Amino acid sequence: MTDLNSCPLCAESYDDRNGLRVHLEVEHRKSEIVSRLVDLDAAVADGSPDERATAADDEPPAPTA
Ligand SMILES: [Zn+2]
Image (tube, rainbow, N blue to C red; front, side):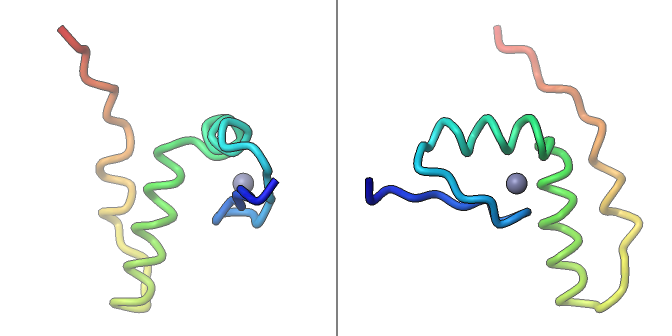
């Protein structure tokens, strides 16, 4: 068991990739993850919250034909 995965959002650790994936999708919604990353990037770049962080947050998944 050398394949430890840790959640970058809450520091939870998992020894199963699927466990981490499920955790991310359930505990942290994908849009939330993006917002976190954007917010972190914005905080580093500008040091203040950006309204654009919530602009592209409600896009439904594109249907695959
Ligand atoms: Zn987490």
